[in-house]
Image 1 (cartoon, rainbow, N blue to C red):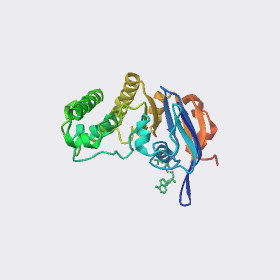
Image 2: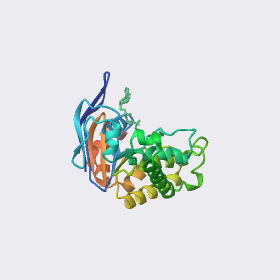
Image 3: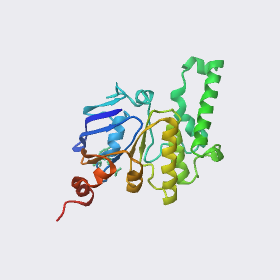
Image 4: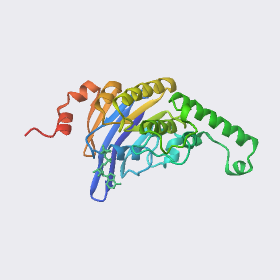
Length: 252
Ligand SMILES: Nc1ncnc2c1ncn2[C@@H]1O[C@H](COP(=O)(O)OP(=O)(O)OP(=O)(O)O)[C@@H](O)[C@H]1O
């Protein structure tokens, strides 16, 4: 399982995380929710190695990831999407997704430059893995199109496909429903559930879309002001007075 304890991060005078903790069981869907500025994205950035935490620890399946750089975190089986989409606009859909598959490559620099047969075999393997992901998320028809100019809902799928291409065990989704229409959110729910089932994934998502969160999560962690203020099933956190207060403000 993923076990995150006591994360603390300061940005100058701002305490973005103040001892936040979270546990996600293997194979489950866990949501991390909280009002704007609660520290959710900062939390993701710490878990995936983009930010260094001032204190605390991150453990995945018994491996200590605390302080590791992003590529080492990826090697441990974690992959993520970004709220603002981390795509190369002039590259095709397939090329973008291929950038996510590089963790699968094992050949060294010299072998790559000399294009040894093993390298060509490896490239083929990566392309096959990418085509499989594209098929899975319904992007085969647009795979050779440049990302530039594709509808936003399609770009969100490319972002998801890129994260899946590294064959992660733990998938972190940062606001996957942000900017999507009602219909697209329904499709996204089905897609995430299918992909999790097929790939035996553990999913951790940050999301503001409450009906999506409540309908698909096994477990929810709620943050406010950089702290974990509640944890439990969807029914439990919805009934928690501290959570209601965090979203609606204290009663007058
Ligand atoms: N790079 C940064 N430099 C300075 N302050 C930051 C930085 N990143 C985040 N913060 C601050 O840290 C706090 C937590 O921000 P964060 O983006 O993690 O919240 P969030 O819960 O993801 O919000 P949202 O739901 O709006 O995306 C906020 O007060 C934010 O202004």
